[in-house]
Image (cartoon, rainbow, N blue to C red; front, top):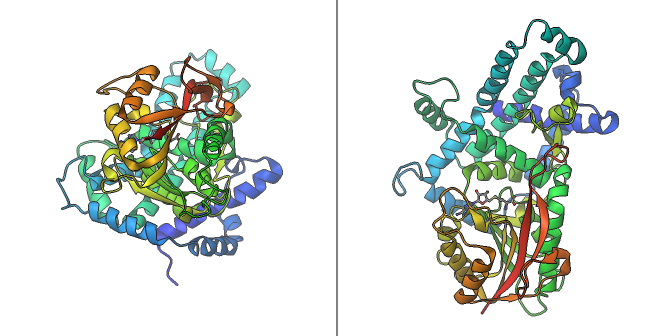
Length: 450
Ligand SMILES: C[S@@+](CC[C@H](N)C(=O)[O-])C[C@H]1O[C@@H](n2cnc3c(N)ncnc32)[C@H](O)[C@@H]1O
């Protein structure tokens, strides 16, 4: 059988990660510190193919296939106006970013290397003798090359899923970079943030950040008594849960594990392409690995912390258990009014351009008697049409037809007298070992549509 070159690249990548996972578990080693030698990889190639076959057999559900057909139709170049908001354009932009991971990131390290030359001739030997400072540049660049290979595997998964020819992306990149260096116009920050989300959502290290918020959501769901534990009511259909702004989807997968039928929704094509990669590959636990922290040299206790690898996914999630509907939450569900039993907004409502439209959409999509569960901060973006305080959100939601109900005390302490809203601290920083801590007072509530 002929294996396309990218499959082989991705294979070796996955294989190297698998080998690394096994060795590091035994020896606490980092692959780049002992080098990845191809002959070593060849020895275990058969194991990898066996694993891949297992992945492919998971397949997709009828609902996923139908959603994909709708998505590919929306993605046609001649469907709607061709501009930077067109989903195909946004896809190309995201693929451009992932393809240029190496160029955009290594450039930073080269710049830092250049700045190091300003350290005086007297000072430099001290740094070299005691910590081998200049060795950090090469080490970081090596790790970035590895991250770039993961990024390229994401690109290939995207091209496959969205049925796009490689030449279309190449043409797009050529145009976007015209007159500039390789990587010109590629969005480095979105790519880096998306890769870090793998750690937050799908690595065991991210459990510190996920744990408290997820527990609050699960306790909240249980307290609503919607399910008999298997996801079914004795005499009813499976309960439908919608999670807009789902990022890389871990919460959706966990809620599906509780027995609910879960639809996740996401606008960012960076997240969506990365999720498609995960969906196709994540049936093997800890099969991938990234060096997520080498692009930012601040807030590290040790160099080893900064250069460390993190493997993912920490669980072999079932990709067929969740449907991803891509696009803007406020428009992607036209024709689905009253379909959902629960809408969970998790670190989401403050992303709204128009918060009123989010609130109205949540209300419209819920069936009468359905519940809206919220968890997250109120960190408004750069140009929101309205910026409401917590109390204002609660008052406005009431007037739109929501009644707030009591939630479990595991969601924290009450925030406002007279309202059943609780808060707990949520760390949002991706790096459990960092010397900095970003935390929010996340607000949790449950509101019933009447
Ligand atoms: C703060 S992130 C949280 C992601 C995820 N819920 C988590 O906790 O990891 C907010 C997410 O909402 C997405 N988003 C923003 N506006 C959206 C919209 N109108 N429709 C769907 N998703 C949106 C963003 O792309 C981003 O992934």
